Amino acid sequence: MKALFLVGFMGSGKSTLGKELAQRLSWDFFDLDNEVERIHHQTIPEIFNEYGETRFRELEKEVLRTFETKTKSFVLATGGGTPCYFDNMEWMKKTGEVLFIDTAPDELLKRLKGTKTGRPVLKALNPENFEEEMLILLEKRRPFYLQAPWILEKNARNIDEVIHMLNS
Ligand code: S3P
Image (cartoon, rainbow, N blue to C red):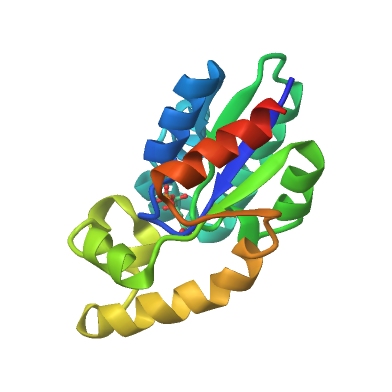
């Protein structure tokens, strides 16, 4: 059984790439946010509204740990904050491969503008200063993402290299 954890900022393409990788490897694909929502019968915004971010981070950590028991190889797209809390990054590195999807900040900005409703962390940023605050958050998180042993700047050749690495 092999595990691949995809980490990166919101909008970096973790789910899209994760599905593609899982399909090409014939591994299972999971999205951590979807798993949190499925197990707790509430959407991420509902969890944030009702219990706050601290509680969400605990639930996220608990659900992440359930992946230890998988018997079939899988790709997991984590949430943008997952590697930045508790010892989640250490745990992922111990449990499998960790790949940081390093999408350019201007591309992230383009993708994230106007998608705030489903993402409470973006909703909490000052809309008057959205770009600047998002970039500050990205800079704060980057040192965590950079703890991933594998970093992907997305293009077809790099994706083939990831597949090769996982198959070997
Ligand atoms: C978050 C990112 C979201 C989700 C939650 C918090 C974050 O996941 O886990 O809203 O702190 O960056 P995506 O990266 O899939 O949007």
